[in-house]
Image (cartoon, rainbow over all chains, first blue to last red; front, side, top):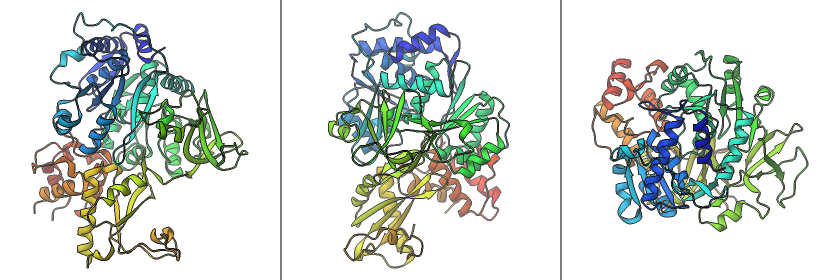
Length: 516
Length: 82
């Protein structure tokens, strides 16, 4: 069954039940199904055909979610866009996926799309506030568009995992991929129509999209908290909406613990929380467990390329092994292999491989990049290193490459280094992730400026500020380095290679001659 | 430089140079998505360090941090010398 067919099914079973709750609007399942089919008819009238892309840009609101489902109804591909991207990066993504229509809030249309439209965006822009009736279901328009032949293997969504700095890479996830995840997650959590969920992550982030699909297709209600600027506001929403589930990346939990009364507040309705997208310090997990012993604490792992969940830790094992990311979810197999692709004995370290119907179709129009991560047997090579214990629980142990995980984002050092090299005066750059409680890994940049090293602390700081501004113009704050270490030349080994431990100021080494 | 200007400069140069902000102490920076959640926490830590104040969790709410004016008056209350 295709995803939107499942929505129609659920709407038939729970027509009057709350599907989506926003600050100013509430939609039942019947509303959501009727509105999305009506908008689908309009999209079809406008020439949107199966396989076309529809971009979605703006704060999560009823119209954006209706447009998402409408896109699936016409068998087109939904692409949630990140409005925090720099104009150049957004342009790159729009050029890459070439949407037939972009649905945007007026604010985003004016501030984001206006800048990129003339050159790259040939499709139609549908501004939500200009045509509100399109999103509320015009009578007589509620006919489903004619059903062409379609299959579960068709791509339903493209999720861009990079592109904020380097070449955009769109992960194509099919109806089958999502169905696999929805089935597995709803089984192991479990999620039923009695559940409700508070969404604090954006929909362009794959975890947000997953929760949208899982909860909607289980008949559960989703309350949208908007952004996560004020942890105490999110806590107040947890109390007020009486949701049974909540999830986020480690950063969300750190902020809730440090900047709100999350631990002290009684949340009797909350049954589970899930931590995903990185590691929350075991001491913090222990604090949550102590303050809320009845709360099920799930730790999950995966990546966008496997829609996006591969493993989850049984909450009953969290106290015993808070460092584990758990065992494979139902229907998914996880292997640890050596450099030759051969499975290693239990307990031995190797690369984490994911097999199952959740593994993506591929990267959008990038055969070579796809072949780089999916082998001929259809297995996803995650690039993550790890090992499995005797109970089949996975422990992660770093990366095969220089990828940094910060605040739930996967960031390739090379992409940021490339941006730094475009900054006037920067001769060389090395970007690293440094352990950090708030974000998991704090992104830091080491730059070589040669003889132009300015004299005095103030001049050095001005230079660091200039480099910082250069970076922030190219990427969102979350992906930009938070500290800049400036070197006349990098410390080198006798063979001329960069001496990384010395440069990074390892134990007993020289501290970097830097400001940050 | 007023407190509003000081905060404005920090946001403009250190947190989001792309926003092409114009100095408007009454602009709702949150509704206009000038800051994402990580940048917001960075701003809070910077305000605490720069003005030598402690922002209590109950006070970290949009009414106190939604605009430059709101932030400046919060800082003035928390730190009489600012």
